[in-house]
Length: 217
Image (tube, rainbow, N blue to C red; front, side, top):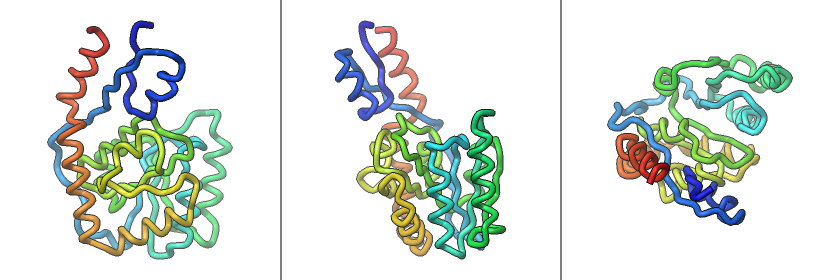
């Protein structure tokens, strides 16, 4: 191996520790794109765009929203056959009294269609993400994003482009959701910063040629 190409500084760390020469080439998404969000839905909708597999943290999100009675949740994403017990667990959790009627499983769906339905996007992964495209997609459309403070998610949302919370901490996630939903100015500010970051660092018309260059140079 002459060089390893990493999509985030976080994923470069173990590669360098293994003695490999590493260059970082960040992920990108289409830009420019329309802005979503603005006036809250009634009731507000929190969305997660992620495969239904345990480390993505859906259970953490459901436990958080269980303490916020005026909030709905939509989970967009399919699942692997081996995760059927986890999916059943999520459905059972969603059926309990503190969440009943407030959680919808959208299944595998178009990301843009899902994002248009949501007021806030959550990435609750309990293990570090390399460079989650779902976070970048939400940011590009100006939706406020709350993510767990590790991996590539930290790099995307740091310095005001989103809100970072401790992984696995449902109480911290609930507090962040409550704060963002209650403050229209904060949602606008987060969306502005997120769109600026995508425009400057994650425009796929620039990141894709840069990745190709690093792979073949």
